[in-house]
Image (spheres, rainbow, N blue to C red):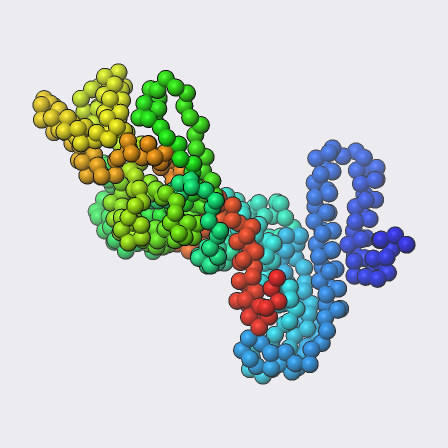
Length: 497
């Protein structure tokens, strides 16, 4: 007896799936299929294959129904004992293969909700959509608009999730993000003396007016009520809420010289250090201080005894700097807090154009000279020289505005610009990782043309993208399913594996 015959005899519930499979085989062997192009064959197998899988899933659920043992009494999470048993209680389940029906026993008592033990055994969601389909929805909305996600689910699965439900599923799928990271056990510290880098930045997202922060919402309302249909030249209507982006990663120390950084050294450039064990995440819902605290908590989880060198990379945002320095003072005063050198270069270029034509060789030489001095730890001398040039310049105040701004910037953040020390110690001096995270997590997905986000859905998409970028999505989904079991079926949560 072959396996198909054995399956037919022992478990006849699988017959519909087997019949559909055999029917597809007959169709593929027929004359009409023999005239099809390969693309038509692919489409046929894809469509009918999903139906075969749906029927297999349905058959398994039907088999579970026949095997379900009747309990004498069942108690729910409310502690009330249910004595009456009802047979054949049905509920729908939209899966990745299509819609199936779960038939199971229900236990009831007066004035309380019925309990279905098989629902807990299968860890069924409270709504229509299976965990497999919910995971697919989460992956789709992480990379595409909600409209595109709806279309892609229909194209690539046998299921269907309307747009409003797609947004709700995404929010639900991301609900355990904070608990997943905060509840992780402390890792065995990395067996390395390499640098632990912490970095943070912010990026704006266009929001619906009701989800803007109070100050921004008030300003937007005021602008809307001003007379006239047009904004004044240069005026912008701010509808953005700032998301805080953070990252923690490991990098090997690489000693460099100022000349090597500027590309002026004769020796070969050293291999660029690669980030390892990188976690990136973003939040538009939480305040910056919460995200920055989480960043330091993540660093402590990786290096609880604080034996490794730590470096914090920032771009000079005052609020971020204030929060970071407060934690540095209370947690670990020996942390190197470093100002992004690329931002310094941007100020130097703008200052150079106060004195030389844009694109000129003189401007280029000026920037290279000043940048080398700053990398050698001579930022004070650069500020002094710049202010002297401003005083002697014959240009008007407007022309010199960028130079004044540059001098003020270098003077204000000079304490974070000991680049000669940072380079000798092999520390990074540029925020490329967090800049890339801002582009990847936010701009590439959240800054789509015409998009105006609601807070809950925006936060959900950011969390899912963060999990995917950090390589934690699979581990998170297992954790999320266990949490769903505990939430929905607390009386049976101990069954989780």
